[in-house]
Image (cartoon, chains in turn cyan, red):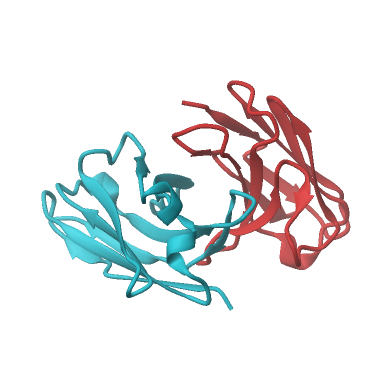
Length: 120
Length: 107
């Protein structure tokens, strides 16, 4: 069974950093594109970024709102995906989800999410 | 960036009702559109991809249609477990974008 478990969320001050993890099981991470999506409290879904698979050299794409501050990486030996978040702003407060991009190019399995709160 | 506009934002309905939600794209996206269902405190769930293909395990009362700039999600007979928020999403081009959501509430 494909499963994703996010961790690493918490309370951080504005300007601080945080690293989120997404532990994958039931499939080979290196074969798949992976996405991060976030949801601010009471708001809709916002795509954060994408890591392509091994065949696409793990290249990345980012939303303009996080580009230059957030970095997506992987450790295939750990079957894990990461989101390094620097220079955090209060508007980055959200639940962060990781998702697998399936064979049809859509996010077909999601983790339960981890909560990030940026506040002084 | 491609903007997705969903309507309505809120919808009051009863069990058994036929419900239709519309998603309009600011430019043509062919059929590169998905629909997700989200319940409070839960992760989104993929219902439909490629505008009209039902994801495995999703009940057949859900259907999607459209291409280009206008898309619809229809629930043929609303069930108690269908009260939720629905989002459309385009994968035609980066940045990937979501619609603002449609909350389906009990009338």
